[in-house]
Image 1 (cartoon, one colour):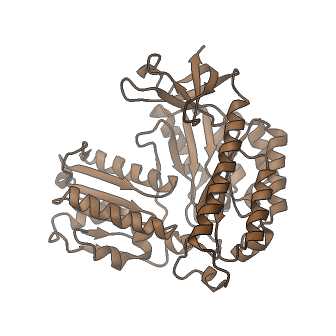
Image 2 (spheres, rainbow, N blue to C red; image 1 turned 60 degrees about the vertical axis):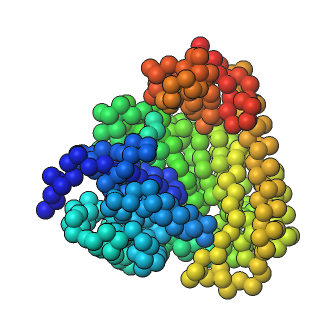
Length: 443
């Protein structure tokens, strides 16, 4: 039995690290607490509850998690501190030893965060963890469809991963692939409409694997969501290339609301490295998917994940990756250096790339990414487009995105709070000084 009275009038502070899925889940936790009478603490205000949702995709992420926990404890010395997420799942005992942490919940337990928090509230001496939960057999699916402080909603359609890539700990942190039913996700999209939402991003760990739990297919989910009246835009956050079917590409090209925007993890353009990673495709399959998208949706924005410096990536293998990406019609590269993770089979690969070379390789790919993104943006200067604007602080420029994910900036003197969450026709102008957006004028 949850004691809701104990939560009335309390304040909470949140901190999230990692992927969009984590941000979506944190937003849902915040919404649940808000419904119980807990408001979000203002900047500089002492919170009664602190929630840190962690990531563990790299060693750097682990370090950032520890820093975030220490900072939250320091800034809110009297708060009840809860740590959950992937780092809490993989390193529960280490997290519990951090001074000031009161509740540690793994990936299975966070679905019942409110229940655990209610049981622990007032039942602990500050700094002595009340619960340390870390179930190895992760089966629970925690629904999430929330927007936080953004205009876009993030709908969690899947969790976990059955792929055991040699460099990755996600299957251990999130469990095997699982998903809710299409009907339940359609119901959440319909609730988003009632809340005034116009754009939904589909999130998950490996969303192309949707259906493992329910016997359904991802393409059927896409078709069902496309039929929800009131949602103007859907985006697919990340989809493995071997799960990006030609049927899905063709449907998105003709659909009512699925945008010409894809994010596809490549990791390496070298087939030698892809085999070492135990990826489920080769560079030719990846190139074929890009070609198919551009054939049916020439204006599509395509983002690509690339890992540099993994074990086995010789200089020759990196040059293969660079050459492959240089000739590929993609828009942006999300480049990140390989980080050794305890317990992963990649540690048995003998060739090790030093940190200096990792940085140099990252720098080259980031420069290539900037060239591709700038060229893509420039090709649309002077055209008209429809933009979904997001709220901006008073006196600041407003930002938003076109259908194909070009970020735009509306000057502060034209910014109007009434444009927030509105689809507006604009004319695309020149690049901003930082080249991160196109300036626009209202039509």
